[in-house]
Image (tube, rainbow, N blue to C red):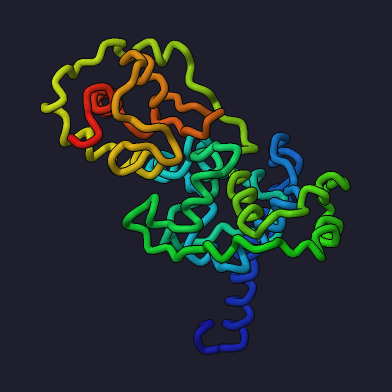
Length: 295
């Protein structure tokens, strides 16, 4: 009996553990992260983005934010922002990986897809005063990042990581702040991956007529939706902050519906077609068209 011979038992147990370790942890490295796993569109970080990533780690952002969208449908819907779940090819240039497991704050793997603003205005406002855009947030303020960026080792980092760069890339670091760098990093997250745009046929099924003509009937729901999804950029009273005021509009109901549903990438407005159903969008349209600032 093995239990009566501890030496043989220990040897056999060790062999079994090593077989399991080899099959589940060592052997997979022979076929993962190979050429077939790479995503051609995913590019290395620029010097500014790499500096931002280092600041992200320095400030411990990865302690509260994960960077991996799991394959669960709820995860994809909440954090995919149109990019689906995370693939291994998205992280080929990450040294080290920042997948994480804690989500005191939201997952940031694809945060660049949610806020496409080229100037990063939402990110700046959020970093300087998180509660100004997400009132319930317990994230501390990072306004102190508005200080000159130390670029002493920027070129050395790029060489060590074997990332391509040019003198023009290094020159762009001049006059930049740590805030500029971390925003550049977050704006990149998820934006390299191909996104399947909504087909025209899918939009054809959406009603072109606003089913709500009475603001009173939908006001409570509309205000609740607005507070959750729109107030951070358009102001608590729709007075306009990062985005324009929404106390009336010359656009047609159908035009407003299309803007909310598809977003305006050039202006940094995200698409809400994947997170808000048709009825909720029409309620927002009704609020914008018929609501007054002080109602």
